Each structure stands twice: as C-alpha cells, then as structure tokens.
Image (tube, rainbow, N blue to C red; front, side, top):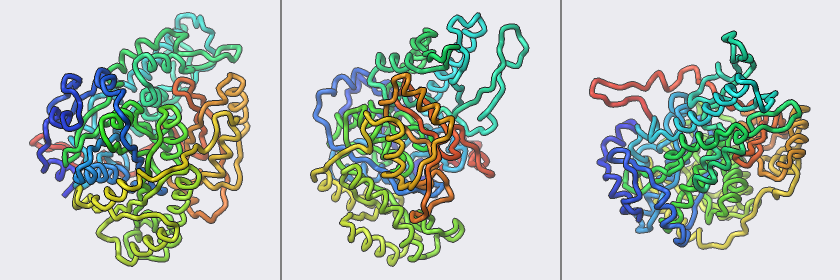
Length: 553
C-alpha cells in the first residue's frame, strides 16, 4: 500500500479530541475543518509558566538523495513513548511544495508512522507558506514602487529577492522591469524558493507578533549610493507584512495515525536555510508534554548544528538527548555503492559507510556534548549480518543502537527506542556550541568547517571576503552563521562522500540576514532555488473521479 492509502485507512479523531489529549484549552483553537487547527497566542501565554518537558532532537547521518526517514522516526518515537504511557508531543516542520512535486515527495512520515491528514499537510495545509510568499513579494513590490516614485531613499542596489514555493530553476536569474514604462528601472534579479526566504526564518525565530514586526523591519532590502543599508522599516512596510503573517505565526495542530498530538509549524530547508521548525512550536510542545520530539533537517552536520548554534541560542533551550537516524542503504551509499545496487547485501560497503555515521556521532557527543542513540530505520531488505556489524561497531564506541520498525508496525516498532530514551534523557550532559558568538566571521567558518565537517582547508572567494568586511563594518559580525551547502556530503561537493578523502570548503559568497539574525555562508554550488529532476513527482500525482488524490507519498 502507498503511504496515502495507509493514511486513508485510519479513522482520525476530531482535532478537539487531540487538543484535549495535549492539554490545550479548546477555546484557544481556531479550527481548519475537522482534523487541523491553529493554536492561538492565548494558549501559548496560558502555559508559558509550565515546567519544560524533556526535549529529544532527531537528526541523521548524511542522507541519500531521497532521505533516510527522520520524520518517520520522529513520529515513531512520539507514538512509541505515547504507547508507553508518556505524555508526548511531536513538533515538526511544514512540507514545501518544492520537494512534494520534485524528487523527495511529501514530508509526513511513511507507512504506519505518519502525521495526518497527509494530503492537506503536504499541499496547502493552513496556508502558512503561501502567507510567507505573499509577505516576501509584497516587500519586493513596495521596493520597486518606491524606486518608481522618485526613490527618496536613494536605493542603489536591491538585494531582496522574490520567492515562490516551487522548484523552478528558470527563475534563479531573471530580468525585471522590461515594460519600457517611464521611471521603471530594469535590473537583473532572481527568485528563491519560499522556504529559503528570510521571512520563513523570521517566522520560525519570532517570539510573538511584536517580535515578528521588529524582525521584519530589520530586513536589509538593499543599499543606497553611500553603501548604507536600507531596511524594510525605512519603507514603512513591516506592519503590512505582519498582517499577512498574523495567522501563519500561530502553530498548527494535527495528529499521528495513532492520535499522538503533533504541532507542525515553519519549514526552512537545512541545506539552504536553518532547517528547524518554529521556536514557538517547540517551546509549546515542551510546555504541554513530558517529552517533546522535534527534528532538524538533513544530516547532523547541517540540521543539528544549526538547531544547536542558531535555534537553541535564540530560544534558550537545549536537547536532553539526540537520536541519529541511519539506514543500511545510506551506509552503503556512503560506502561507495551505486544506487542500482544499494539494496544488495554488502557488509564491506557498510564498514566504509560507518565512518560517515561515526563522524556525526563524534560531533554530537564530543563537539556538542550530547547524549546520543542511533535509530536504525529498518527495511525488509536489511540482513542480520549487516545489522550485527552496525551493532558491534557502535558498541565499541559505547553508543546504543535501536532497530525501529514503525513503518510496518507503528508504535509497536518503537518500544525499544522509547524505553532507551526514557533513561537516556536523565543522564548528565556537557552541552556546548560549536563556536562563540564573539568569534569573528572567519573564525566561525573555520570552526564549523574544520571541527564539524572535517575539512582540511577553506577557501574564501574575493566576493565573500568583501562580504565579511562589509558585514563586520556594519556591526553584525557577532551573529551566528548558517551554512548553505550540499546535504549529501560533509564537504561542499555532493560527489565527495568518502570520509578519508581530504577536502576544502569553498565559500562562494556571504549574505547577511539582519532580520532573522544570522549570516548565511554559501558554499560550493548550492542554489537557493532548487530545480526539478528529470522525472518529477508532479508527473505521478493526480486526482481521480472520486476526488481522491493519488501518487502522493
């Protein structure tokens, strides 16, 4: 059965029942049909003095292009802990239409470990991402309108891009203002995918509506003739943008197929953005439950690092344990096996691929000082010899392994990891960051590149050198950094996946996100507007005569 068929086979509870199970006051819900709702500001304020529950972060080894099931494992853990009688809430990111219609498909889990209603969540959901797109493009329209009517602010260079929530490589670079009308100034521009928009990051990092407005006002949209930044607040547009985002600021409540409450909110990618759901959603989950499960995008080198160095700093939180997801196919992939042979038994390839997993574990344990357990997302093609090799290798490093079979068995397949996590979150930790905020920008880049990625050299382009100088001269050098690079390798080259192969990180350019409060380091050939594969998922998705969506996974 396809994931969508499994999801349809389960009778969902009305969202009011899920809210009651989570301890949410029904008066503080805004219903979006029977099975999804917004949680209002009043509820966030009502529980803000509650004791924090334990926070469990789910991350992964470097994935294959199709991912390794972090969301599936996150859902499995939440359902497993609920089955064990623990009050648990899941906090996830919202899916982007880019991968839904691209290569990866949806992001609501798989098999018996899903959040629902999966069609709604994977498509328009409650309109949050559309609201971000509208706010982003409103700012673009106001910028060009200001220039059209005389350019009082003397804007010389516009750095703000438009966005759309689809993979469309044709929009990476565009020419705008070609109508020939008087006062319209043509220029070279471009689009980002919405999940890479600074407004997505701002939404995810904002505490409340006032904080949201302040951050929106601090967006740098370009520079005047003297090289001085021009901010969104100079255009007096932060209030209008906040109006478009007022509902999107509130977290969304849904459920797993086993009726565990799930808060889904915000969806920045980890390869081109900071890769975590909203602070509001995570902190609300911690206030409502004894165990809050959340995830960070892609591998631990990207998602977990940004979760710790950006989100934890800003939210003043820290994980009580980390789950590092692995699959045997990913171990083989990083062991050099071609995709068409990845399901064939190969213990030798796993031995090589284990080096990737072990580096992630070493980072989490010894660089960030966190308690770690490995979750092996088990597939029917995995052999006992392969599993035993992984178990023995991890045992030598004193790292626990748990086989998770929730795709097939639901919460029953996550009892082992649930029991192990209940103990693990109580163990002491020596939590720390990868760098200090007082470090200069180059030092931060070096600490991440050398200590987390394992690079032996960094190269900073002439443009990036200028970017660093400008950012530090503007007084923003103490902000955290957000690396944008390939998720498929510790390096900035998706093809360089072997751990023992020396590599350098090439920093192409650097972008200041003053509103969000971080600096984006663009490395290698990464693009902030992805493209579609040769055969996109859009070719398989359809709706039948009964109104049922098919091909969504």
